[in-house]
Each structure stands twice: as C-alpha cells, then as structure tokens.
Amino acid sequence: MERKRERSDIVLDMLLSIQGRGGRIKPTHLMYKANLAHQQMKAYLEELVGKDFVRKVREKDYEYIIITDTGLKFVEKIAQMKEFERTFGL
Amino acid sequence: MIELVYSPNWFHGKDIIIDTVSIVVLSLIAFFSIRCYRIDKENKNYLYLAISFIVIAFSFLFSIITNFTIYYKSIETANLGFLTLTYQAMRSTDILFFIGYLMHRILMLSGLFMLYCIYDKHSKSGMFLGLYLILVSTYFSRSAYYIFHLTMLVMLLIITLQYWKNYRKVMNKTSKWLFYGFSLITLSQIVFIFINTNPLLYVAAEIIQLLGYIGLLITFIKVLKDGKKKGKK
Image (cartoon, rainbow over all chains, first blue to last red; front, side, top):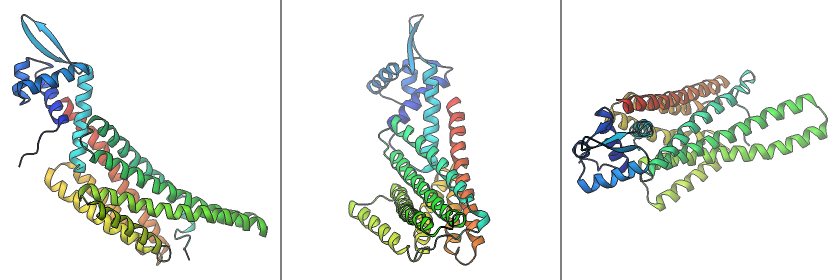
C-alpha cells in the first residue's frame, strides 16, 4: 500500500515543482504538479508565503508563484532531511 | 571484583581519543535529527533517534571519566609513594570510577534499547521489562564484564539487521554505509568479549569500533551531500 504523504513531503513536492519550472509557476500548474486539491493547495500556499518560501507576483494578467532564496535553502534542508529519514528508516 | 585495565600500557589514553571521536559523531547525528524534528514534528522517530544517540554519547563521556580515573590512579601511586596521600587519592577516584563505570553501562544499554524500540515498537510493559533487563545485566556485568558486551552484541545485531532490511528496501549508498558502520560496531563487541585473553584484543576492538563510528560519520556526510544535490535538481 502507498504511504500517505506527510506534510513535509507535500511542502517539498510543491517547492520542487516550482524549482523544476525554473523558479516560477502558475498556481493551477502547481496544483497538478504537486497533486493537490484546490483547498489543500490554498492552505499550503498561504503557509509558504507566510514563511517567505514563495512569493506571488502578477505579470500580464497572470498570477505566478516564485520561489525565494529562503525557499531554495529550505528545499535543500528538507531534501537532506528526507535523505536522513530514508537512510535511517525513520 | 571489577577488573580495571584491559588495555596495554602503550594504548593508555588512545581509547579516550577513540571515545571522543564517537561522541562527536553521535552528537552531530543527534543534533541534525533534532533539527529535522523541529521541521517535522509529526515524525517522532527523529526525536527518539536524537535522544538515543545523545544517551549513547553520554555513556562514552562516562567511559572517558572512568578511563581518566584509572590512568590518574596509576600515575598518582607511581609518583608520590606517600602511603596516606596515595590512599586518599585512590578513595576519591574509586568513587568516580564506580559511578562512571555504572553510568557508562546503563546509558549505553539504555541508548541502544531506545534505538531498537524505534524499529520494533513495544508496549509500556515491554519497555519496563527491557529496562529491568538492562539493570540486571549491568549488575551482573560487575563480576563478569563480558555480560555487558554480550548484551550490547545482541541489541546491536538486531539493530544492524534492521539497517540491512532498510538498505534492501531503499537500495541507496548512504543506507549501505550505515549498515557497514553498525556492522563494524557490532563486530567490535564480539572482540570485546574476549579481551581478557589478550590485551591486544582490546586494541583491536577499540580500532574496529573507531572504524564503525567513522562509517557512521561517512553516512552522515553522504546524507548531507546527497540531500543537497537532490534539493538543487
């Protein structure tokens, strides 16, 4: 059976999705890429904005989500954490 | 009667360096695990791993204190030669030695038991039974030192087997290094059991243990490096 995604997995998936798109992504694309429901994504996105991991910007009538330097550093931290978890089987 | 020194004279003090290396490696991993727990409080295993590694690190700290008292005692007796002074020095170091000796063993077995419990969840009564067995084996190891190493060997075998299973599951290099590191630490306990037959076996056991902790350090460095690489992709 597939393991339920933890909170940290979802945050990492979201940040990696933005990073994978060159650092900016449209909210709908992020929703599909991170495999989230609309309400779920809204809640997580607010949290990420609050922590200064991402920023919302408007360009030519479109809204984009941009990953910040703090967000990039956090991606590294979480990736290390996940590697640690996998290695020690935690 | 507790036997004091298994180490050959030329190796005195080197085991303190080896214990210090172990403390540094264990502390690095424990503090990283606490940092992970602060990010993801849902996963309590980070906290349990950190606590067990800190407890084992403290056990090595007590081992260092014990070794210091042993070496201090022999220097004091050799240099002074005044009967009363020597006697007083021995009395005070004896108490330190006894406390250090007991704490080293209790903390080491407790730390390993905590680590084992991460992978094999127990009921509260099972935990109490485990702690009781730790105290009993510490008590009996006063007269037969090998009981302590035998208990450690059994616990380490189970933990190492868990890391082998985990390596088979995730198949990455870091988990392989973790398995190698713990295998060496386990192997060192087999050698420790026979140290009263030849002092050189004590040196061999300490060196194997050191290699085991270096294996753990390599695992930790690889975790940080590989994680960083994956985060940049």
